[in-house]
Length: 301
Image (cartoon, rainbow, N blue to C red; front, side, top):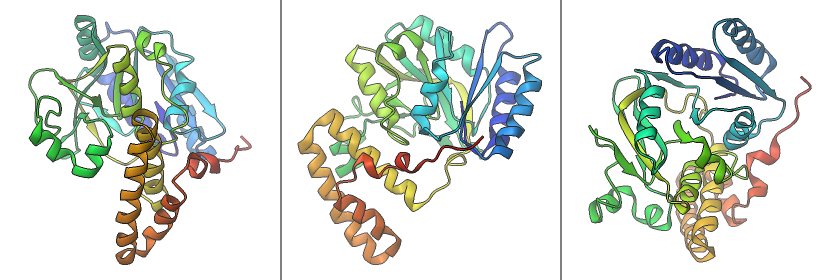
């Protein structure tokens, strides 16, 4: 679990896991503080130190913000379990997700990753499975893909009763076989934020491991609470998207999408001037060198 200036969410998440997880399920909490303000880190450390008396907890302080994948790759080096759950700190368990997902993985050896069903705090369904980031998805949209080929692109916003295969599961809660996760090298730390799910599940597919929604497990996601919206994050979204497209689909798909986005954001900038900065990043081909990752500073403590 990653903490970044949201200790209250992290504490609430851990408490909900403890409350809802069976005592027969052995678990370890590994929390990576991703260069939070020292006050926030201290608040979390006090809580973790108290929990250490009854729970297997570990808090790791990174003095530089390494992003989602980088932070999780710091944490995973301390994990010894057969299964790995990467969980956003802005979620709450509704039931015993860990035991449910573990049992599913035991009974389905083709599964490399799975996730429980997500809901908003108002009990509205949030998509757990999704379609790979691709040129087709970006040009035509998810609904069109679901309409023309529902087998390949199952509906994202449907409330499923039985486990459902998807192309990937949402990054807010990803439950992996540690053997498979380690075999593909884990998260790509070139990606600071966004599209880690497409990338990691694309690589799982290369070793014939699949992604599933397990709807019996349920959790609440305070969507976006850990990463408030900003134009900088919107730019990061496009930088990561274009990186993943080029990595997995080649230069032609990347070039087509890049120019599509350039046209789109040129005209949107005429109505929303704040988008000009995003347009200029696209003019520069949205390289990783413009990622927020390059702007991080090492904290003194």
